[in-house]
Amino acid sequence: MEDQINQLIIKGNDSGSVKISDEVVKIIAGMAAMEIQGVSGMTGGIAGGLAEKLGRKNLSRGVKAEVGEQEATIDIFVIVEYGAPIKDVACQIQTKVKNAVESMTGLRVLEVNVNVQGVSFGTENKDEDGRIK
Image (cartoon, rainbow, N blue to C red; front, top):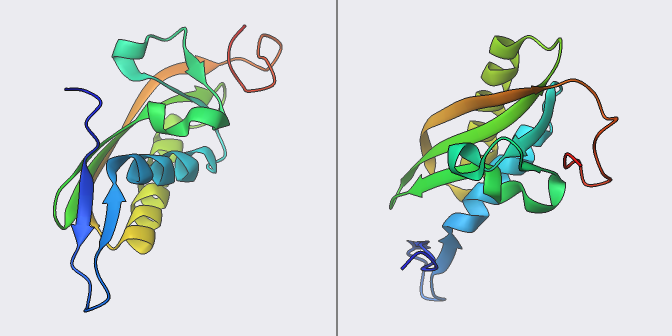
């Protein structure tokens, strides 16, 4: 069942426990990636196709996260602005996403895999959400 929501359950004290869904980890990672200069947008990955470029409203769709009890592995699918140094942008994404997820969730991030799915040549064909028209 694809709609099943995975959750990380953190054992709390006598007050109860804390549950963090995979979707929360994906949103944190997506927001961190979009803060990097040179990232034009995020895509749905290979399955989502290059034509479906996503804006800020659905950041988790360009992110795949596998969350365990204490660690996570994250795959991010991005579109880079033309002229931006792809290697530098990818390294900045890895650092920013790792730091954001670790500081906000307490998980140890084992890997941040950056998948550059395309290059953006400007904003003339985008709507207000950053999607290609």
